[in-house]
Amino acid sequence: GEKGWTSDAGWGRMLRTGQSLLANSLLHLHLGRECRRPQNPVHTNDYATYVQIITVHRMALAGKELGKDVGQWLPSTAAGAIK
Image 1 (tube, rainbow, N blue to C red):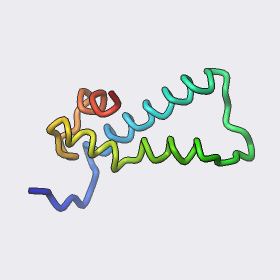
Image 2 (cartoon, rainbow, N blue to C red; image 1 turned 180 degrees about the horizontal axis):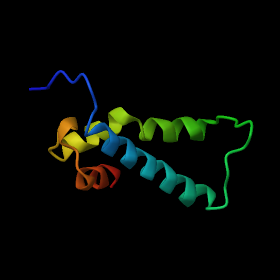
Image 3 (cartoon, rainbow, N blue to C red; image 1 turned 135 degrees about the vertical axis):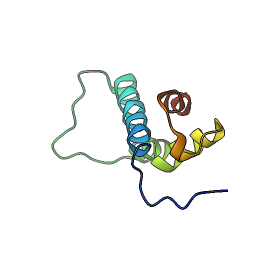
Image 4 (tube, helix red, strand yellow; image 1 turned 30 degrees about the vertical axis):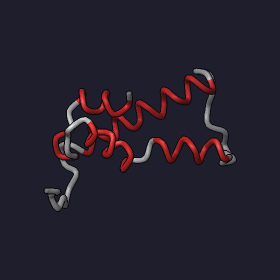
């Protein structure tokens, strides 16, 4: 069954690193490497779409589909979740 996690020590960093890697990859793919965040960003529907894709919860669910609970995340799990 599910564990009652009270901390993300040890596994949370891996999940967030994978999330950041995916976000940066999407930015470079769609906006190019020279793109920089504007001083006053405007959040569009595209922004909302990407944010929904890369939430921590969705990343955790993708890991679960690979047979890993959140406390078992390893680099290979992060890579698999991104795929």
